[in-house]
Image 1 (cartoon, rainbow, N blue to C red):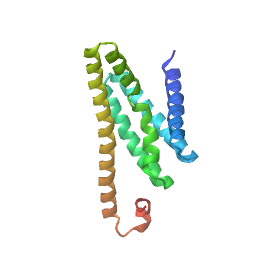
Image 2: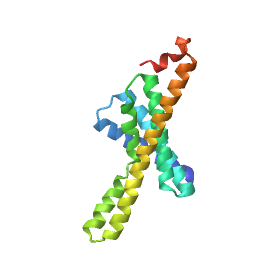
Image 3: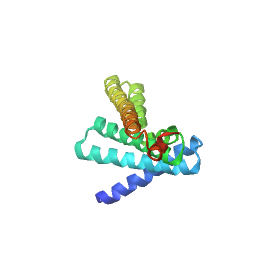
Image 4: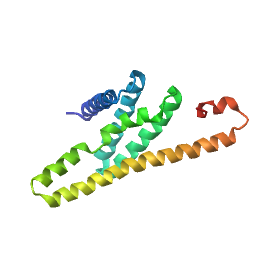
Length: 162
């Protein structure tokens, strides 16, 4: 198959998976679609970075960073909590299949491989957390700097006053 078809299939399935988890968490329709879009874009970033350099950690970190930034943007624009977008958006990056493989190898008495895969799952989970935290920190720095520069312009700072 061509790369464009694979890319399209990845986008559609990640959107559906993200929206399905959003339905489980009872997210309203409009944030659900936005969260699906965030999850789809993040998965495509992960997929593209992983295909280009093969580094799981970097791809996961960048994708979770983008999720956090897009969640902040959508939350401010739509006046919703950030958690509505970030929880559903992060679902495609969670290493659930890897943790299943870890348990399967551990039950099958292949402990060395289970420990190796467990370390990988731990690192990927750390990359998700780091991406989310770094994006939040950068957003807070940007917000404070922007508010400081535009103190006398209430029309420009209205989006940050929630």
